[in-house]
Image (cartoon, rainbow, N blue to C red):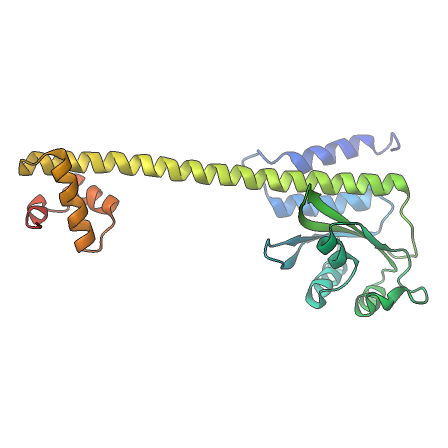
Length: 245
């Protein structure tokens, strides 16, 4: 790595992995990835395709509109170096899509790419261990071979973005689980309060009051938590619960 691009490389890695900021935007991060690849690597354009976890692919970001359209085309026809890369989890490249026989593997993609002004493509997997979540595609307008340093840096950037996305997904999952747990605890508090109201007004034990709440909720198709909240807020007459056996 040349010293001239080292500060920007460091800044890029920080941007790709800083997923704890309150306004983190995954698509904005991937757009930055594609733009920084053009700035840092010897390529003319870059794009990112992500999987949906069920075999489907979608274009997430691109450095230019014609790059985005080419990626959309590759996804639509389910062919091209980017598609092969994300399916296999391995780098796939074509140094000259216009060379004799070079387009035989992806004839429609090769034609579309050259029509868009690109003659070489390098696809790098976005993966962590065995999980492949997408592909970073690097394009050049001329026949081109990426030097080893650019290949390593490109793969490192793809890896950093992958870690950032998976970490952000884990954080969101943890927040969702915590919200669910807190919701369950809050519901439990409401139900205990409702038991106290029913027991106090009906002369029942807490266990009998809870049974009365459950029976009424089931009989009338209500969520137990909603019924308990209504009892606590006095929007349901406890006498109507006493009418249930």
